[in-house]
Length: 184
Image (tube, rainbow, N blue to C red; front, side, top):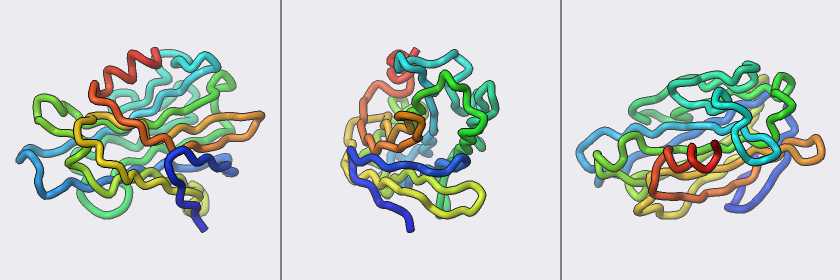
């Protein structure tokens, strides 16, 4: 049985291999321009900075150097039920320098398309066991991010040898570039 988290809650993952699924729908009051939401992961060291530039996983870099984190690709429309994008994580392969994985979703070209997360609904992140497909946890964003173009959904972190997930739900309006600036 999956655990439904609230903002700020933390939960053990307890699976060496799991998949991070992200999903969303677009409100009917859109801008007339297609929405393209993108999932990105920042693999951080003890210093809360990228282990290397290749540890920034996004639509132009789908795999970590150790092949422990694999983004399955960019969904350009978000249409359909279930996960819109997925990232597979194998903790048995992860570089020991990686202590945290931050999961961010951004709206591609949000400023020029005049789009924000206030126009997005039913946003969620879920983690499920890759081998059994059993859902471990889920966090549904229930806030109205009316001006934000990027949201940190959550973070997966190592505490005393155990991997945990924290539901973050923190938005900002400066897009993916701001997160790159923070974590580089």
